[in-house]
Length: 181
Ligand SMILES: [Ca+2]
Image 1 (cartoon, rainbow, N blue to C red):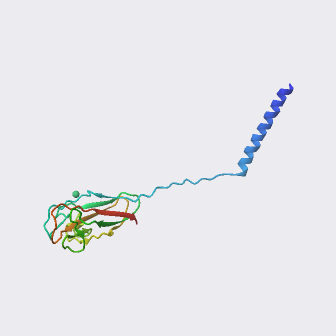
Image 2 (cartoon, protein in one colour):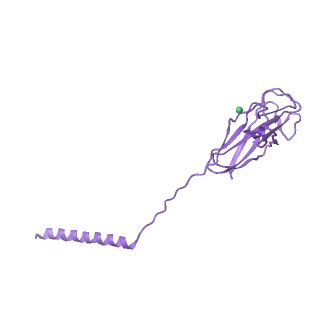
């Protein structure tokens, strides 16, 4: 056998032995196990449909609501997040030239804006014997523990001021806030 060829064979044998040695060593010196982990990003979200109420043109010291006996425009808050939520509600003043201040009673340029979630009506509970709660600038509880994809129906009611300083339209924003239950 030429010397050079023998050397190559010898080298190959060493490499092969090395590979075998490593493979054997690995098989006996360690092992692995796995954990398949998943995570879902928490989403806290709420939508209100249809999200628009028009009370129309109203006289002083009058009221109008969104029940079947009023504008028949019950609103639905939907938990479109992926965790159970608590919902709360607030109203602004009525803005436009002379602001109507939100209050628990009506007065001069002072109005009341209420919400209802309970009554004896069906399918809209507030269509009969509604329980109204005057909204405030701060949030008040609208619903507790609304499950993901769950809904809460509510109606709104306005009581107009005892006197007006102007006769131009007023804009009000009602906001529903969702926090994790
Ligand atoms: Ca509407």
